[in-house]
Length: 626
Image (cartoon, rainbow, N blue to C red):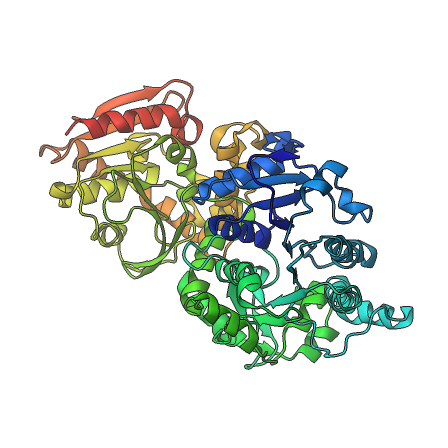
């Protein structure tokens, strides 16, 4: 056991490193509780992508708590495994240390569709019962709070155990996940009554991101539907106009759970925790589509038809269909606890939008954001924007065929300097618009009250130069990275949309690494790999590859290249300082005029990806020249 506090724990959390568990831990510690987290192999080093070492589970939890403003000095990390029926795998010393625990929170479970029955039962049923039996041995137990599910627990007279033929039918109809949650709910209620354990069951609906930050921790269920919507893979919705898939913000749910021992004095309660104001599913999808700037499906397909069609055709997992009902739920008991604790539900539509922002920012769990962003109306485009929108030191504009994730390495080196980053209109995660890029950039920077340095890569150097020329009083300097109009023209294939579009759409991260950087993806850093993963994903979205190819063609027209060269090196002096950096392997061939020019040894066209430290050093030097 790793013990960092002086007093023994009065609370224990199972599943402490999970999505719900870690938020429960945070609010318990923030309330001054001494908490033990039971973690399987807590000190074992983990392995990340491509075999890279990662922090242990225990260290990862401590870092997460610290990053969220909560000290871990009242946290005890205990090694255990709740699927182990022999004392939960706790050592004799740890069992002794935990004898003073009053409140037990079981947030552990396996949430995944496509499970085998034995796999789901071992965790969701047997594991939960193991926790119950252990809690029954605690002399001062006040409450065992068990997280169940909102589609189970509706039977006022639960039966356990069920005959095998009934169990087999339950799992056949509901699938392994929901079948195991249904069996576990009945088992916990029946066995707790037999043992005299003061049990409270909480039945949350779809738990989504934090109500303020949108922070997410799980990416299945309703998040899968949002992913399909985002990627243009949701041509129709299963269900009816009244299908109801309620949600609840993870921070509200965790706070309510931690309030139960104090504000729900009578054990035995069953609390359905959800926001009854959640729009019906078609309205939820339309709300999110409008926010993200994508099209919403207009067709509803009855579930009876969806169930008869092959999954390969519908894309709908049969296990998820049982959640698509018109049922409503009695939330009165949970609302009473919330009222006693002074809790109120956050606005559900705002919470949904913030959750969707964070889902997209984090690549639906594949590329966690360095600087989480969201969607704003800019120049008529639903634009993905991150960072400081009013007082940035730097404005970062990406080139092609990338998105603003290409600044990951640079952002990681900026330290205390602030930045505003955005995906160009129609590219990356931003929706298209009919206005010129200069008009879009003018609207993007309208709220900015500082005079930032505009840092633009490749194709973005055009609107950056034009903005600085039109608004010199709003810019300190312009820093152009690989200004394409001063470099050799790209291959004709990339300037031909009918050829370039399918090539770009089929680009994987590995192929992008080889094409853009001349190195296989496996040779790239995590930051480069994640940047290229994001770019490759966005190129697969409807229209993005085509718009990227058209931008390449328009940018490389001779008249456009000549106009930019004239603007920079013409007879009229440019009104703000211009600084240029190019890679040694992709040198300038045009006249940079009065601009200062630097070269990064060993770099090509994308030095912000391959040499972020050198780029940031130059940015800081430019910023210091006022």
